[in-house]
Amino acid sequence: MFDAAVKALSQILSPPMRSILWRSIGLALVLITVLAIGLQRLLSWFATYGEVWAEAMLGPNFHTTLNILSWVISIAAGFGVVLGGIFLMPAITSLVAGLFVDDVADIVEREHYPTERPGVALPFALAMTYGVKTALLTVLVYLVAVPFVLFAGAGFIVFFIATAWLLGREYFELAAMRFRSPEDARAMRRDNASAVFTAGLFIAAFVSIPIVNLATPLFGMAFMVHMHKRLSGPRPELLEPVRRSSVPMA
Image 1 (cartoon, rainbow, N blue to C red):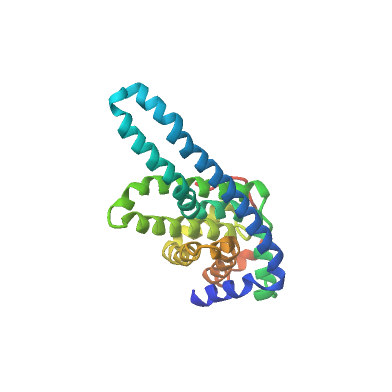
Image 2 (cartoon, rainbow, N blue to C red):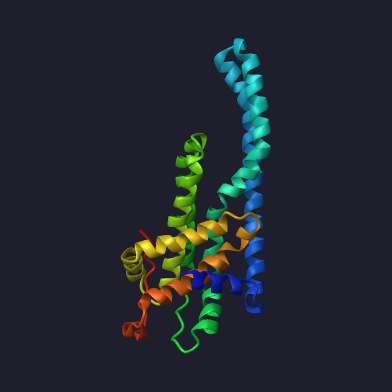
């Protein structure tokens, strides 16, 4: 597993990957910018119009309290943009990954597995469905975990474990579906749940590093291509044509 991670890391900056890397980073930055602007506008709205609405509901006796709360929210707007970008980076990279699945996998397979049958490109809709569903699941899990951040950092542990499970699941199934139907890919992931989760920990650690995490779609996909190959072993049935459906993940 460590060898697979090293191979994935060393290939990120290789000449064939550079074009994908810059496109991936550019798209991730656009999404982060949109997220930051939206979050800042939302918190600013709460700090202004929300105060007026709350005072009308609670009465003038709460004016001072609401002023203080408005001031706190205004400050939080600045920090919220930064923290939102950090915590939602796994969701952002999940969306980006759906666009570059086959580009990354093709390069990895050509360089490291030239004598083996190459995978079949995923339908765009199927790849994006996986990306969107993983992103939404990530946001949902993070919203549930946010209250636990206040308790000795327990929320951060939940974030990390959830990220490992979600991203490990997504990237492995995307790599597996180049050779298998969605149903078979999910079954293989379940049969190797511990290995896939452990591999997901590597991706979770990678996505936790600021700036470096912009390359998560490349690292995650390249890493899981190696993991799928190793977990598959010699499988003659993989030589059969792949029958693929557009059924999204469960």
